[in-house]
Length: 124
Image 1 (spheres, rainbow, N blue to C red):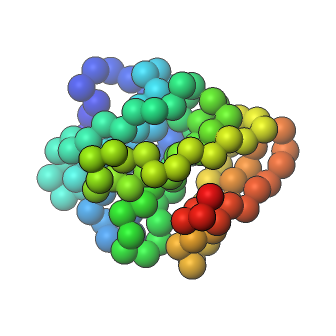
Image 2: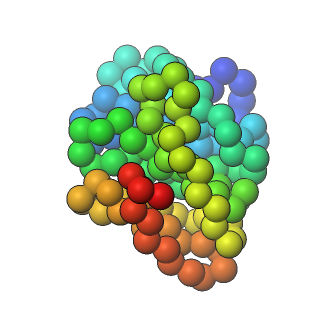
Image 3: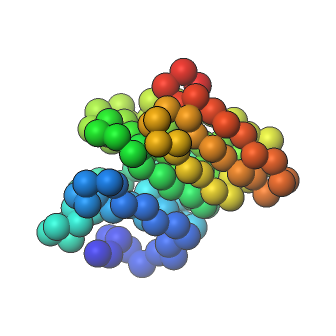
């Protein structure tokens, strides 16, 4: 699995079904999505304005991916819709990691400033 142009990847995530894998990049600030079975690049998600530092798929069957970046935002993506960014949430610092609770609704986010946030992803 490769990107169309050489880029440095900063984070990866795979969905729970083993169908998709994503990688966030340092420059350009994109998220690349591949079909894990075929290795084909199927989408490029763009919207961050700084390096993408964290990715996490929802643990249920909803097509949700949450990304975090050094642009002080987390983005909730529905990667099956035409307008893929469902929600953008502003943080107080660069995002360093993201995880999603097993309920599929709560996103736990840590930042470079040493804070941890819990967001209800569907409600923002």
